Amino acid sequence: MSGALDLLQTAIAAGAKFVVSGDRVRVTAPHPLPRDLVEELRREKLALIRLLSPNADHSNGAESTPASSWLELFLERCFRWELNGHRSPAEAASLAFGDCLWRWHRQHSQPRRVSGCAACGEPLTDTNAFDIDDGVQVHFNQGFSCIRRYGAAWRSKAVTGLRTVGLEPPPGWEM
Image 1 (cartoon, rainbow, N blue to C red):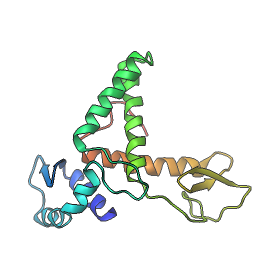
Image 2: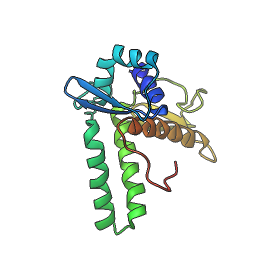
Image 3: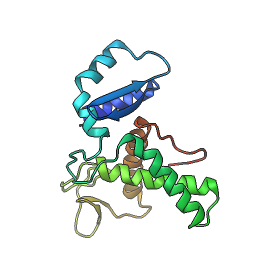
Image 4: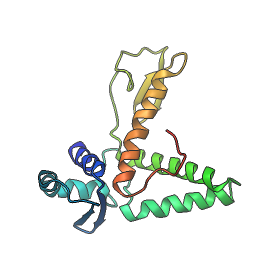
């Protein structure tokens, strides 16, 4: 699946947007994509569909959300944060985008079952390991550097993934 995600990231960097409908993938871009990229996207079509379609088979068992539903989810979460959470529209948009990031992460992350820290790769002990989720462990140290590094890494991947389905971070949103 990472090959398909890498292709999506490359295409997005070129301005592409993706919409999946059944067994079809529609790609739009402000300028023609490079021919070799288009050919790779065609070869990876099934992986792209699995990545972006509902009920995709992800190793962590989470159900996928179709590309068209990400905007709906974002708008619904904005509405809830603004009305029920008594937030300004800007705050609601940032919180809603964070909700979408978490959902993307849960659907597309690969569970880790290794003995080292997910952020730095160094060995862990019983006294310095912090369990995050799905077998992920990081160092629990002063300054929380490994926790922060791991969080920044998955959020960055989730932002890229959400961009593949046309959902951009709201103005002023910071990782």
